[in-house]
Image (cartoon, rainbow, N blue to C red):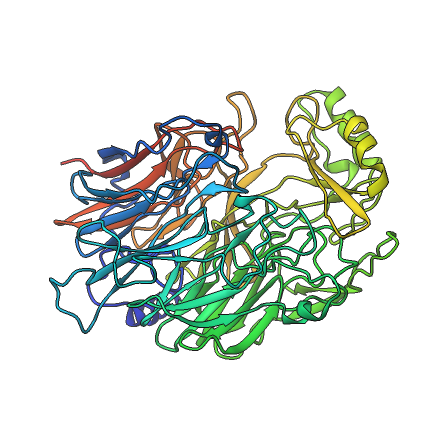
Length: 622
């Protein structure tokens, strides 16, 4: 009866005949749940490829392809599928055949670097007052790698001349653009539309320096492109001698259209691993913040990490759910914590405790003395001991144990040190930008999770040249970051043995169902593989999709497969090989009486997964 009541409650909040996928996360609230149920556990064996489309995005070949990631989730609006490529081409497809209706290329320069080379999607807006056949009656909005906001006619694929400067807005204006290198400030996630306002955040490479771009969130008029409001997550930084930047919303912003609220997930203030130049808890970095979508007015905020020293951004789109009879926001984090907040006040609806955490031993650093912890279980393991070390051989296991013992490892929120500190989970998650799906019938949050340890080491600036020569990186290769305007540079790496396999026991990636009734995992299942002879469970980027057919679909892993799981048990019931790996989130819609499942399969250059340019649609065979 509880399942039935929740299903009826959720059904009442859905628009009539919800057969499509109108926003990046299915709906403005990012539920990633579809009421379609034509495809079920009973007939999924008959799910076959209906059509495949090739974007051609990786041509001409450039060195940037080594970073390119096809992370988009298409949307279905007014009879067309709309999606974006890693280089911001926007494409409209026929939902039945995959035939291209139009393609718009904003000509993003490929002759210089970008922090990230991806676009996760687009947003749509329909003019409720204009004539249906008027130019740009339907507008497709996209943010670009070179920091533009575009408005494109959904029917013709041409820029909307009445929006901004002939269809585009330069987002580098008003953010104290640093030009450290041109691609350090960009947009990688889909904008969010609430009423007649289009809202966008930004992506910032935040370990270069203290004084990076301001991580402001901005709302623009959907018709004219006029700037309506700006919200700065860390206004206190303007009073600093060297102003801290970032704390930007690089992930997807969720919205409650009825209440007129936008829910903004923010990242860490710059730089990630040393906070001596940004003392205090750094609100509202590492938070979810509710803003009035029409004005940008602050309504409430909830910080999931104080004074971040681990790159623990809120990477996930907040998920709007119903919880114990109240409208709520579910927040999933990089360390696998789940917070459920009142949608109108931001107050936790389940118990949250402030717990003491380890102190820093770095001169100049004043780490937060406590951090917020939910009283219920996390989605992933959160501690790493010698007993947890793993290896494909005993020699590899022993190597991992010795390596772990050489680092500081005092549990969650152990601050970085000169000798290296273990963070588990590392900065790729827990839950990353793929976020969670909410199945309202079962009242579960479903997420793809990562479980690999990271190692961070601070290096006195005078010692950086020598460190570049002396530090022996592990097989996945690390990253040196200058952290200019601080006394220290930084090196981060992954705790990976000489075999190339993570030192902690597998699975290194798993899809999990978190039961919102009990506060515990209902089930967990390894997701994909990282190598042919490796144990199951791959790190992954991309989210799951749940359907009323009792299924959960996910790709995300490094192997080129799409998987389906039983929503009740987590048992894998179907898998299919894709033309390339799919670091993306699937979507579904019904068209001409048939349900389609669509996934973008183009690989992830940084993760060295199989590359390509495919959009693949599945439907039940006749």
